[in-house]
Image (cartoon, rainbow, N blue to C red; front, side):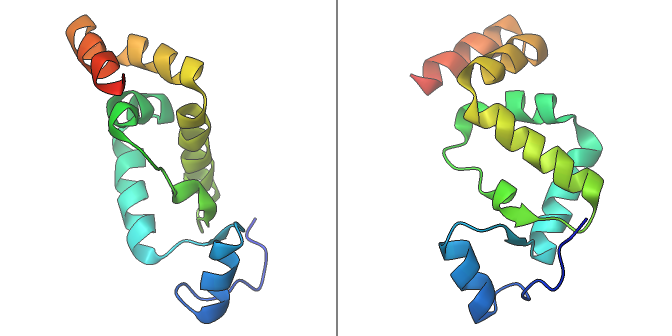
Length: 107
C-alpha cells in the first residue's frame, strides 16, 4: 500500500525526503527498468547476475506503485546487503566459471 500523499518525483519535497533517507515514490523510468528486470528474473537470479558488479543499488529507496514490484525490489536490496545470501544466490544461479570470475572481481 502506497502511503498518500507522496511528493511528485523530482519535486523539492521529493528531493528533500530522498536526501533524508526516506523512501519516495519511484520515477516512471525506474518503474519501467525494474519491471523489465522483474519480468525476466527472480530477485535471487537478478542479484546473482548483477550483484557482483553493483556498488550501489538505490532502488529500494523508492516506493513502487505496484506492490509486487516493490516487494521484488526490496528483496533484491536485501540480498545485495547480505554477503552470505548474495554468495548463495551466485552459487545457485551462476556457472562454476562465472561464479569464480565474479568472486575474483569482487575482491
